[in-house]
Image (cartoon, rainbow, N blue to C red; front, top):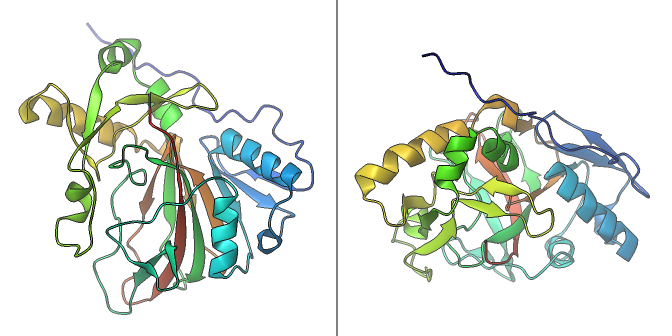
Length: 286
């Protein structure tokens, strides 16, 4: 007997999101993402602006701010306004600013950073709340970053699949994505997170496994868990869940790691690219 594909409404929740005080927000796709205009982030955010940017992030998951000239101290201050910052044990930060990770591709390199779908530092017991990425040097074209909405990825699964996955726990390790060669790496061997986590601020469930760091499902053999994970990794990339952000000089993108994944496109061979990233610590998923 033929089955019918389960298709709930696949659209980001933009209800009442155009009434922000002091800046404008323009959604980028039906799935997620918005461009924010009218803010100079180098000046910091007032209390009201901070609350409004947080509300915009919860509504759109990925915020793009164009033409933001920030130095390392300003970027750190901006990230710190939303929480404590993570210092990555695998990738050295700037010499005087360890919270700022350099994501750097030199001319004539072919291997690029993080070319798989993932959410940042899910190998920590308290994964990231969000990340801010600032463009320092960009190629003339290419090097875009793609983002996917994990609320929609979860909600688009059939009720039967959601019932099966609900209550399962994924096994996450840094060493699957980063290897063990980093001289100063200090990370837990294995952490356990729900396959579907509940966002602590919105209460919505989001798919929370990624091909960079999720290595298994607790209580299953590899032969049992890998086909299921492979299906979920393919599923979460569906175009209707995604937005593709094209970088412009000094653009800054702020995304919610609790309900998105991202992918750095490796399509700029021979061109340099330099980005600065700060990552905000989050809470323990449930």
